[in-house]
Image 1: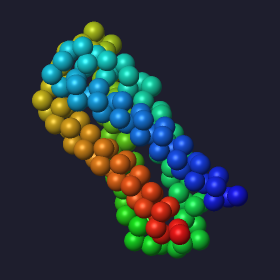
Image 2: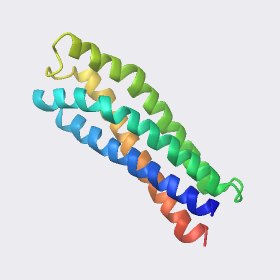
Image 3: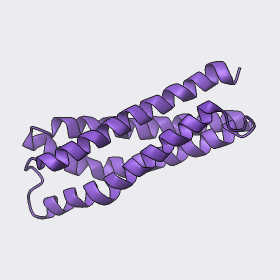
Length: 149
């Protein structure tokens, strides 16, 4: 029963987190060259940011409970490293990028394209986010299909 619940919690975390990440990453990508999408990204991140954190927490808790009996395998270690990268990335987005976007919005500049230096930082963050979430999901599926069997 506990394994079924932990799988459910992990999958719920991936659905919530990866869904929110996909939405904001696509907005951010489109916002690189479009004032419309830059403003949409600023507004959308207010919803996606807490959803990403909720998804991260759920996926981490569900996985930790599910993997509890396995000890530290290479797969678990890789997932913990990915989680660490996603948390550091999330801290950067939450405490650097988000305040920057909100300050611009307050000044009436939410539709002004971001400076190139911020676009580069956000692009790196997008790559970390995209590869981290999808890679972690792939490892989770691998675990369910091969390692847990």
